[in-house]
Structures are given as structure tokens and as C-alpha cells.
Length: 140
Image (cartoon, rainbow, N blue to C red):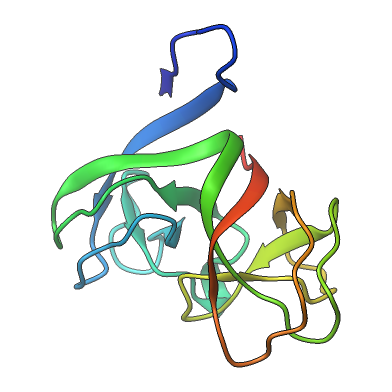
């Protein structure tokens, strides 16, 4: 676990180092969950799946090749999330959840673990992913 050094004016953030076993290259802001389907080692992560939505790992902070290691953010402010607003406008403070098979989050009201809180207002946009979304991550 890594803590960002405290600098006046910079929000504090917490990261963990994980291994990308998703068979694809990651992108900044992609969601990932711990891979307890095949690896079960507490280090390997993949794209969210229905079976693993309750074991969120965090959000990639860098591009990482398959089988490579990198940092995912688990707590703190970000401006790099990907979000789809499905049924209603996303408002500041709305909870965000991970979605099966997707690197983006959505604002649907379900019983899945809320992994972040929206930090800006987003219009309804069912088919398009909004990138660079401000939010507060709270997986830790």
C-alpha cells in the first residue's frame, strides 16, 4: 500500500500495487476487481465480473500490459474515472458502482458495493462513457 506524500493543496490518495491478469492492456481510470475466479492470490486483478463485484480492487492510474504490475487507486479524490449515467442525471454525491464486464462505473441504484461518490453533475448518457470524471474513491 502506498500513500501519496502530503503536499499542501494536493488531495491525499492511497494506492495498491496489483497484477493485471485481464488478458488486455489497461487504461487510466479503468475499474478492476480482485481475481478470485482463477488466481485467488490477492494480487491479480481483472475487469469486474458479476461474481466479483463485491471484491473491488480500485482504478488503474496507468497503462499496464497483461501480466504486468501497476498502481490502482483505492481511496481519495480523482479526476480520471469513467462513468455511464444510465437512468437519471448523475448528481454530486451520488454513489457509483462497478458493472459486470465494464471498465466504467454507473449510477444505477443496486445493492452492489458503492466504490466511489460522484464529484460533479453528469447528464443522462446511456450509451456513451464519460471520461475524466471527478469523484471520491472509497474502496479502502
